[in-house]
Image (cartoon, rainbow, N blue to C red; front, side, top):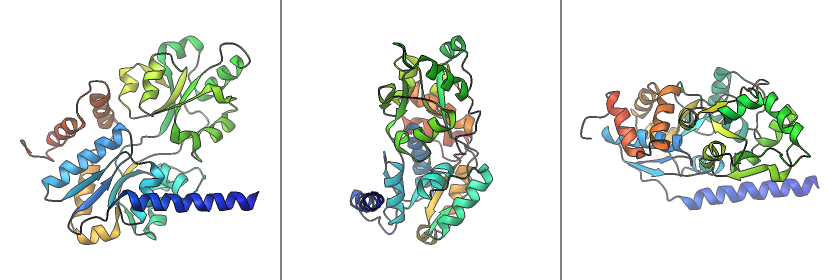
Length: 308
């Protein structure tokens, strides 16, 4: 069985590499190909980077809505020059390290490990978009739930009844090594398959607000947490690692563009949880176009000229 599992894992890895290579055409020598994932914050980071670098004379091609592993394989194989990655994702998903680390330790570790792969981690933003579970505030207060331990207790007490709790998760988290199963194990949360509602990451917030699920997975910088009056439950056993957002660039691309690292570090320096939460809210709550929100932010920090 171990041999079969090993073969399956090997074939899966080959499949991902092939997918990464076939999704992208080779980047033009003079330009940069920028990859991003499939949620609002990544769309904003991609647009902020694109508008800012284009104003500096760079040629940018965006590749959006990529799964984390596909994006990573594409960058390793030279199909993407630049991405915004999170330290926790790189540490656990890309390098298989489960050890608990501080934000600083996680950054130093992934920076060192990826250097051998020709990937350079630049300065991190003051932006820690870690995972969390959240509930509608009124529901959480009525149930006396403020921590993940409280949530596990409430879920387990209802199991076996006609009012079993339903929890919402995105597709990726349900299968990640830092995802649902180890979370359940740490907190002793007993969930049967029908209690796990899988959906697009952006729909989880609406599902919590509208009562379709009792609790769900959120990102801590998402503007809908405030907009929908959700309560982020305290991770009292420290399950979720730090997820600092960092521009990661292929070494070859930095060599082609000597000033690129300084430009990206300048952009990273003006991003933090509050500013990102505010931009996320503009897109997800007020339904403003990502391009407009990004341009407004860049102009407010003198990183984009008026009319650009």
